[in-house]
Image (cartoon, rainbow, N blue to C red; front, side, top):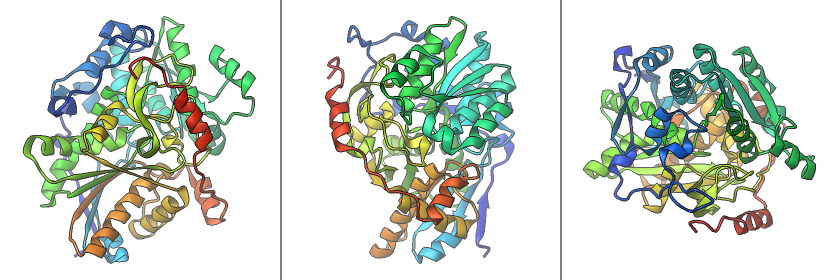
Length: 454
């Protein structure tokens, strides 16, 4: 039997619906609150930032939401994405486990992010929007929204976390190639950015800071809307096309996962793969385990507090209940830039509170070691973010080896590392530091949580 086993669905099998896990939860997630009144927000409260179609998806409890046909047509450029059986990795680990990975690196920008970027751009175009402001960490989201904006003729302005802006110049070039503007954050182009720089002139930035800048642009300009690449319910829902395809592909393989592993920063790629499988567990009672892997330097699920908090550093967003390190927390400049967010998606956090998932944190050297092992066996160099999922999958496979169990492991390889080779250069030269979060800074950030809702 060949070492390379790939399961490819025909184009006609692209899912026609996104899956909304809210419909199957045993307990409804906490509402989003107005930070001034402490009262739950209604759809109209979010209208300054998002088109109404996306707002209605955000608050929906319907199990399935139709994917517009124009969005499915664009998806056909790279979807359905392949599912692989990692036989060479299994042999290298000498594990009885079976390892599968869904590969989202085949998209035009090399990650899972276009799944929601295309959808969000479509709904904004339908609403007559001309310009969208957003933020990005490592640049995967910014380049994906830039790609989607070019398709629908939208102007895209991206605030990129400064440390990633400097570490990953090719991501900026990709955004500009699609016609977007990319600005290092914190910047002097917004009121909040100027104020933050005045107090912290050497700041490396954070997603929370970049979100504040992007939200400010949208909130102060009637012709601009805001777009987010993770965290929010509708974003996670758009990503479920990944898991819905994987369900069909696991059926093709005659197999079903015992464990699903994913890297987590805001939670979108992790949710996209596992929500459809977890939905089956909630409806039918399977024994599926779900494992989230996050960076030790920004461990919101493993060290954060489950509380209401702002999604941004400037406190411009509504309050959501999530595992948070505090909105003022600024993580160190480690290379998995897409995982450098102070909070976890409210739905992922809710699942953690319901004991429906496990969470672990690893340092970046261990994750890069796992990524190199994977690349040498499977021929794909993962993005630094995806290395966390690879590390988690390898840990599960080694557990199976110790226990003598032949379990099936599935993870989402959410992006390739072709624009992140400087990180690999630093890893091979021994210059990649394992950075822990600052416990004093974390304590200070958590002490400043809003009193509303907590």
